[in-house]
Image 1 (cartoon, rainbow, N blue to C red):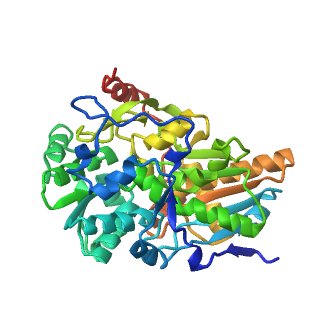
Image 2 (spheres, rainbow, N blue to C red; image 1 turned 60 degrees about the vertical axis):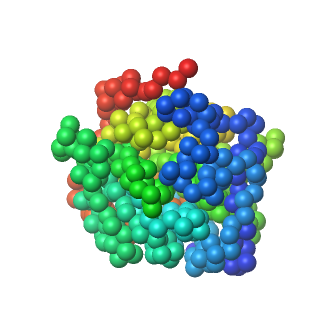
Length: 453
């Protein structure tokens, strides 16, 4: 067999429904709370920022939620996405392990994020919404929502974390090409942004700050709703097309994963791949090991506290129980901007608490080293976020080599790095700094967690 082994499903095999893990959990996750009353949140509490169709998905416990035909029709442009066997990487590592990767970078915006931006734009258009506000870290989500807005005739305003706004100008240009307005956050456009600038005029920004700005715009504008690229249940739900397709593709390959890996920032690409694979384990059967990989400088699962916290810095969002570093924690400006969020998806945090996944953290230089090794073997330049999954996959393959075990490893290559080449230039020039976790800043942020009885 040749080096390139690609498993491609027919368009008719695009999933007809998203998988909702809430239906199969052995115990339900803790409910989100109203920040004022600390009572469980009701659908009406979310109505100022989300259309009711999305709120219904957020609180649903139905196992399968049908994908609307207009969404599936757009999915056809890049779905089903390919699954590859990484034979050249296997040979370079001299490992008996079989390595597969699900490639989500083939979509027009270059990452998995478009799997949820399209349905979110669709449901908002159906509800008569004219404008969407959102935040973005590395710019993958912002560019995906910008494209979805263009497809459904919606105006899109993106608050981009300031350090990434300057690090990744071509992501900004892509959003503008699709018709969105891109603003560096913190900005002077919102009350929450102005408050941050007043106390920290040189702030590099964070996803928590950018979320505050985007939510404020939606909550104070009659014609605007908020769209989120990760963290919430409906976002993770939409991403399960990744895992559902991968199950069929691994059957085509005549193989089954022993280990499944994904990078984690807010948790959407990881959950999208692994949640469908966890069905068997939750039903009492055997299942693969599942590994979530995050940055040392923003280690929500490995160092965060499982507690109720705000999803944003200005405390405009509901309280959700999640692994958190504290809503005021501002990570350093490492290049994997999509992994610079203070919290982890509540549903994913709950799955971690149930013992269904492991977590590990890496420094950015070792991840870029793995990304370069992968690019020189497989030909795809990965996004900085995705290099974390590649690093873990390589480590697992080398473990298999040391133990003489021919295990099967599956990981999600969540996006390409074509707009992140400055990061690679910095890596080759030796300019990337491995920044340790600021324990003092973490302690300070955790000390400010809300008190929930």
